[in-house]
Length: 422
Image (tube, rainbow, N blue to C red; front, side):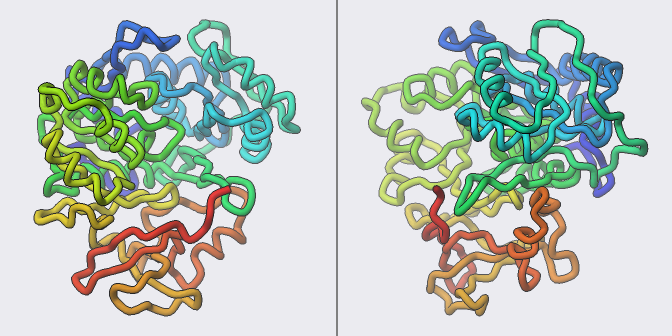
């Protein structure tokens, strides 16, 4: 495990990882003739990634990009997303992923709200980005990856000063609730601490010193793939396997072909896999455990018995992704349990007036790091929305919007979202 502390930047951490794990595999993509990229598959080592990241750093620096700039990225689940992000974060640029399912008006809002200085786009997404740009009041230059053309120059100069652990590394947009999506500002320290946290939970979710192969079919614009599993892999010397998306017909062939030892899931994936005909190869894989959320209670044990590995239910959110997880035996399979509070993630369950509810009763989960440093390890706030940030942190606890119940032994169970997503 790479040693980092509260002052380490993403660029520094990647440099250490590339030196320590040079020949280990770092990023992989399954074979996929259905995709417009890497159809024959893809895998590079830490050392090979370091060479590409250094080249990208030189390219961005030469064009004038640096501290204080933001770059939007519409690259789907391409592994290049991670290489560009490492390069950009190394020189102080913040990355703003774009959901490829966004409509033009949604892209326009993201561009306007984040005021990006450049937009990176995959060739097949160029028309989609252009439509969003045409509806946006904020126009930014665009660069299509893989074409070798010179980068457009930024309209403003980079800020002076060093890149630090507090520097903005990403802005990730939440799902909209009663209004527009909010932009969560994530620092270098936030992203690295999330990876360390995941890599060190232990129990059934122990990452071996020799590294794992983490198959994560979730979208790269989301905190799960972009932050949690990616930085865990980087710091632990593991390989992130990044398919373009989940498909029930491709899941097992890709898991077997890439020799995955850890997989990530969402609840909707489980019934789709169970609905496929039983096969003698159901246990013909190398998976040690799965990390995810939302498995239907009645399917939890059934899945584990059929496929032979534990589905470890977790809780996390973009604003604070030091996950809680039910990873210690005996687990409470089939109960929506997702773990207990631990040092670094303190929890209360409260009513509408922020008063504690009785054990076993539903209420909103509110969290903090500790009384001394309540916001440590959380996002830096919502971009351009101090009021929403203050409201979420009322009383010194972050209000998650998740309804849970807590047993007398501390175990937390998910009940529902307090707010409906529109």
